[in-house]
Image 1 (cartoon, rainbow, N blue to C red):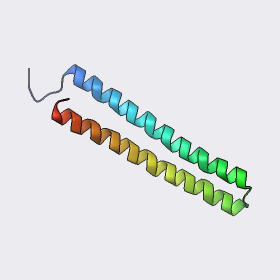
Image 2: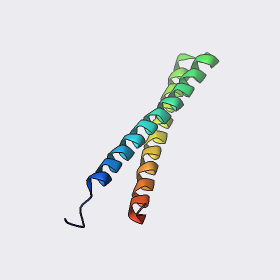
Image 3: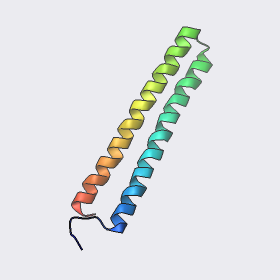
Image 4: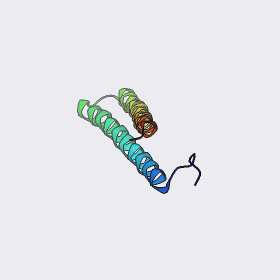
Length: 84
């Protein structure tokens, strides 16, 4: 067996970690967007301000989701390289 190749267990662990990262990133982005949407509804803003708050919430949610995704995958890679 080639020592440079991943075992089936390592491939499965990577698949689970990628799924975890994607799901938690999507949930985080959704929660942030929902918070901005709720804030816009509660404050009864004008049409332009409402669009701005929702757009900002979508942008902030997307950025937070991508940051979460990258953070989880980098942490997993660091642990994998350390042999954990």
